[in-house]
Structures are given as C-alpha cells and as structure tokens.
Image 1 (spheres, rainbow, N blue to C red):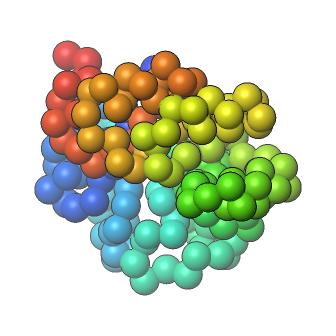
Image 2: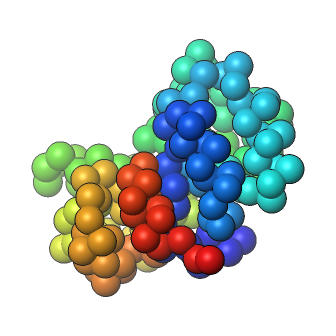
Length: 186
C-alpha cells in the first residue's frame, strides 16, 4: 500500500468534499461524518475512480462503534483502512487485514500515557495524532512507538504541514481543501 506516498490524506466530511476528492490526483482519502446509508454508493464511485477509502468508524452515523461494526465495514465495503479511538475496532481491523489506524487525542500528559498503553495493547499499523500541530509530541510518539504517524487536527497552513512532516509524520489528514490543492500531484 502506497498511502505513505501522499503528504496529505484528504479527510472527506461531505458529499461535495467527496466529489472534489474523486476529481483529485489523491489515491487515498478518509471518510468522516457520513451516514451509513451513503457508504454503498460512495464506495462504488470511489472504486470506479480508482480511489482507496479509509473509514473513520467513530464518525459514521447510524453505526455502532464496536468490533461488530468494524467487521461489517470490512466485509461489506473492504476499505483500505479503519481509523478509530477504540481498541476493539483496531484489533478487528488487524484481524480483517485492513490498515488499522489508532486515533489518539492528546489532551494532557495523562491522556498521552493512556494512549501509549492502548497502542501497546492494540499494536495498530499507524497512529493518528490529534492535534497534529504539535511537532514535539509527534516526534515523541514516533520514537516511543516506532509506528508511522499521521498528524491531524488544527493543521491550517502549509507551515503546519511541513512542521508535522519534519517531526516524523508520514502524512497529514486534513479537510482543508486549500491544503489538498497545494500538495496535490498533477
């Protein structure tokens, strides 16, 4: 999987975002905030356009956020990956052989330590660090876990992207279409 070739992984919040993603040169994108009833058609269009989708399971409306939902998503839609804050979803994604991305929210030192414990238990393929505009923490998480890091949240400028990448993130997840355009390969 060459997801690490993209500096930006578009985060898709709306169907209008999805249309923009389909017409872009990006191969991989993250689905956020979609209703479960939209998934079938979204995946059909994505496949027709040669696009690979990662599902943020915690944000799919109308779906429970547990290992049964993860199993359903993997079997029914065969996404290239799942993102979740929940350990049981990450474990199921790994069992189903899709990219398992553990999302961690860094509110304070206690949350960071709890996240390290969860990562040790779930052994995700990648970690998404939220907020991603903290280069020193990106560096620390990468060094401590040895996992590829995606940076997301509060990434607003090209400088934010570059600092995250310099700190060791392999990519930045963002819904900012100006950043999609700036980093798009033509």
